[in-house]
Image (cartoon, rainbow, N blue to C red; front, top):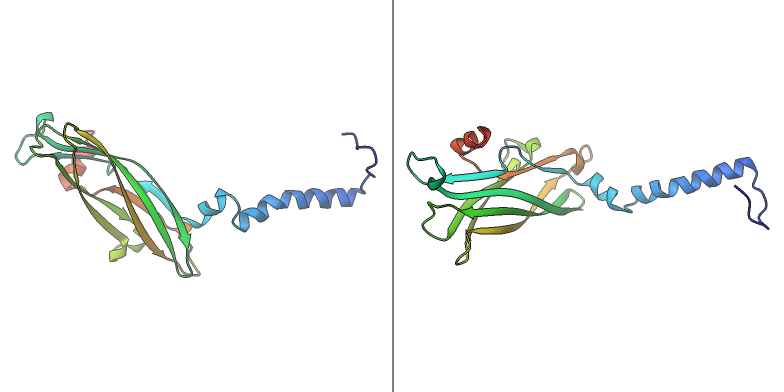
Length: 185
């Protein structure tokens, strides 16, 4: 590469030092909170639990075909952020569901529950929180996108940071509903 006119050549050691200094700027920004990568380092890993991402609620009785469905639901997305405090991380989540009113739903209501679980705290109460939801389908609508916003506090110590924790989201299912999901229903 040609040197611009009027710029003296740098000794080899100085060129290496300048190159190292330039290369360290992104690392310094990363360590001091610059960019999105920092927030990923301090935030727990959040994911939707397999087989708990969907809900099929059947009407009371023995029927299990399409006409017996009261409510179908899918946990389709989540987003959020975390804020670091001295002794905890506050995780603010927005959880999105798509819900469909089934043929056996005689009203316009939908009721379901979903959970946020942190296995590292199991079996303590803070290991799993269940959030009940009651919603309504607007007149003439059999499908709705529902968004719920929640906050979870994760205590941290000097030995464990928030990024050491796993957070799972899913519908709170009965044994029969979970079995139905696992069978591919």
